[in-house]
Length: 239
Image 1 (cartoon, rainbow, N blue to C red):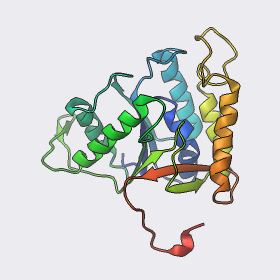
Image 2: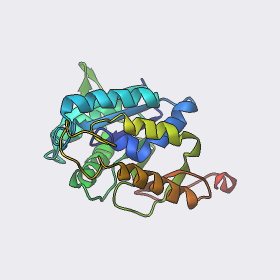
Image 3: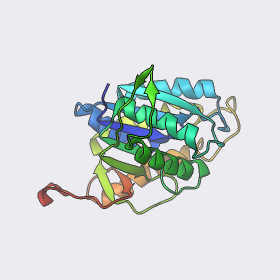
Image 4: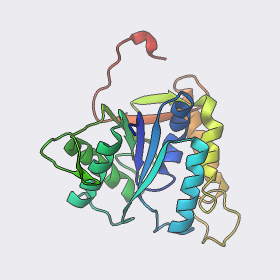
């Protein structure tokens, strides 16, 4: 299956928090969208790897994505090295997305910036034909996405582009709240209270989307950064 958009992020729930509205928008427009989680989030304070997988599947159904896979890298301890890079390269060459979105290049959580660098390096290597990979015994062709973007996560980074997600905020919010052990948690059964389990966190998330939206005169927005200059073919397409 060829994907139009791939969101490849380190923890289950990163894609929903940073790009849930973008995912919902392009699914609604008929694009083929997939989410690839690098780790199972097994070091999370609340819940378990099993509950996170169940919640990720529930969120994927809410968003309507074609694919959700987990590469099973080691949460907290993955490295930007050959084995991890090749796992990502095989996935990129398998789905051949036109656009890829990954974690913020710098953030409060050290996994986010490290994952962003890992994906960035793997994207480059994936385009080199002398980096050889196989999938199910078949040699894969070199491939590199046309566009790579990064999320705006906990730490505010000035975005290079903001997408209007006003019509898709409710879907984004539902997909985030599918992670019942993580957000708006009302019970200690899944672990102690955390920064993100407090209901105030969802208010902050909504406020961030409103702030980004205000910058382009819409209700809700999602912002992204790019590692290269972005170009447009028509100035009249800009808001």
